[in-house]
Length: 210
Picture 1: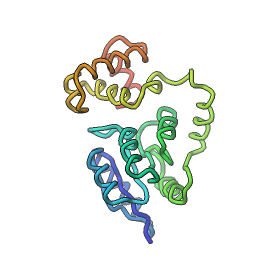
Picture 2: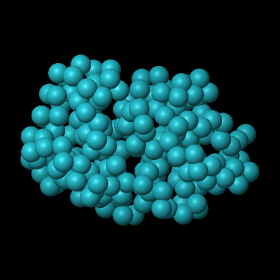
Picture 3: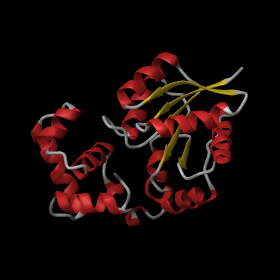
Picture 4: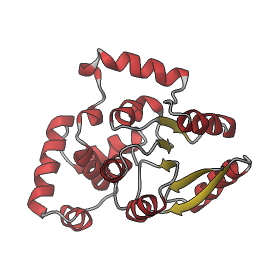
């Protein structure tokens, strides 16, 4: 019986590459692809794959919020984050959110397959460098990077602000009131010790958040 997977990534070429790697294995198949969180959620909850592969930055919702939504419907579904973001930036957040694995897209195809097999067997996949990151993070809460102190919703707003979206545009995208987004923006600036959107955008670009 084949291992069934769904891929959520907003880059078509990337999805094709992941599919090619997966389907080169005789016992694995991709049963669905999605370019946004909403489509991924619908697909995952209807198809009920064995593993979901999620990117962090999706156009309509970040991967952490998508994972929360998935957990409400399918609490036992194994999830692997596959993203361009370095492990030192998001590995801890991913595992705390309930993911079973985290890989950078620069990883080899062999490592991706290895991770999927480990997760399919009920394990948690971590690279050696990620294991060190997680170990260091246990007792170094006060040394977190500024964006790691944000809630998932604040992080999502940070990314949208960094993309140049206005408060009203973000409010529409997230189906929230402009006042709510303004409050979140103020909280983000305070937590990160910054003064304006330009500083947030510069930080996000320098740390590969967008």
